[in-house]
Image 1 (cartoon, rainbow, N blue to C red):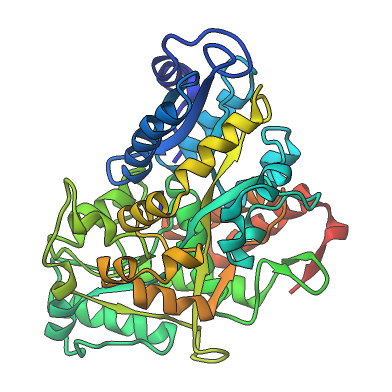
Image 2: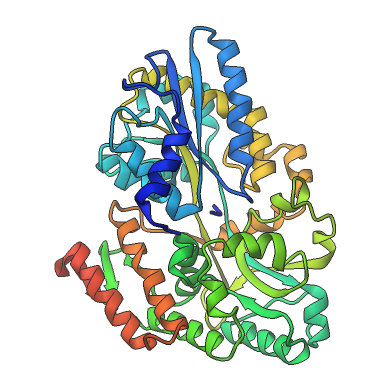
Length: 450
């Protein structure tokens, strides 16, 4: 999902201290009967906070001898991961239930932050309703399951129909190549220089948003990927990697993207969703399927979004292959390694993922359903007009390499893109720096030339 690292000194620790006020020692919160639930909350992402509050009430009613302590971590994605790691660093602060990104499952399981839940899943009748892809998303390197999927997502292109039509493009615009995207952005810049023609995430502050819904949306539309799945080796020096960086260089050198100073803002993603698109200040945005959820209801409600915006699939580089591409991820609920009562923790997860709660979360968070009973629900299909479109992109989608070292490798992608958009490096030099960092992480024997 949708969803920038700041100094960890007083601010990060202080934020956790406030969130944990009243906590005593012990592996499961205040005492053995209290569950500590850690999850992310931001100005534009409150769906998990709303769900957790609802589930807390339901759970405490079902189990009157148990208590739930909610720990919302108010931070953008990279800050969330960092603060969560601080919590997991001590049994006294480690959560019992964790809102866990699928790409962190393997590394966090290997680091000893999570515990397997296969025994509990075997006795849960809801597990048979999950599709195989969702089940695979929660696996660790050892083949055991560490997380239950909350849903998945895809990524595509949002475009302002009025701005594109003013630039001479059709209201049902569907680019067939990267050049089509750049040409459309150039036309918008010429017809309306007061708006940002194109947004593609590019900064280190955006973290995985830059890696996944920015760079990888380009890379996986070439003939290359980050890892060769046939050899299980990481790829260095590929033409696709270089071409993706060159796309960034072209977009920012020509002034088609945002001002780099804006793009480097840690809150840029929220501004794109809540300000630029609704205010008609951005023409084309490569972004995630969850954005409309924030426009349907809540503080940033925007009833006109469906009439204002068009949706397009992301084309491959030159229209080859399947013609289109997308990236998918998603989040899970996992049981922390220090939970003194794993069954109680899993019971909370099961309560959070009842059909009613899963449906509510999918609607409010803009998630693609992974439970068959929810996916087939007419209420689900009718709630958000974009669900059908973004679900159709699953046919073209790709998933990030599911390895423990992906998150460490991925963090070097925004380093490369940011160095290019700020003019600090050429695409060739940025790729070389990435390759050197990659080899330093996985070892040269685990890489191959693209």
